[in-house]
Length: 268
Image (cartoon, rainbow, N blue to C red):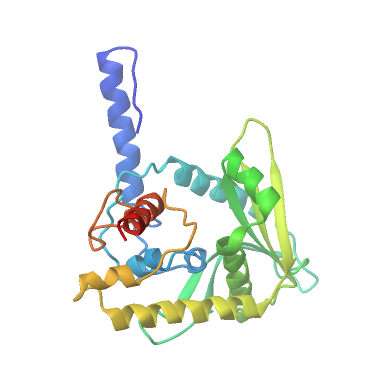
């Protein structure tokens, strides 16, 4: 948080407002979510998913919440505007399913059930759409390189959720909107593929089974047997702890891990 004021009174007020925002976000329903949701299943880092599965204490507690808060507000605005433009289908039912809760997979097994709120399903177009409010550099990256595995998996998981609800989509989409002084919109879409979702769920189960076998709660030294991807995105990871040598306390991140590996290679 950066808080400034033109005099001492204003400085204190800025700090209090900033802290209010941080505290309010920390107590929001989204921040308190414990179970893995569709937006996380495609996360490339198995270690991050493992921390999440065990509801491990977070080490990166100084993450700036403002981007997520703005994103939540934008989702609410879009939901309101689509609701205002709701039109009936031929059968009299609403065209748009807005922020509907869908079940991707129902299961009595603890941690195996997967559900979430889908941003928008257009029954006329048979299209499931997800909004992503991103920075301009990220917007350009997704425009050039596509949505990446994480967002692609999320799109098809919500497609499966809609199918389970009786609304099989023909296509899934992710709409990237830049936080910028002019409107910049990029849409990625492709035909819905149930198998993408099924494969993602199988991967999640494999990671969970591996985690249970390693039991890092009782054997903290086993955390290093849970892999990270070659190019992880660590900046916003809740379990990032730069310089950490104890993975039960937090992960040092890609740069530290790579540096350690290089040092070991030199010593060898």
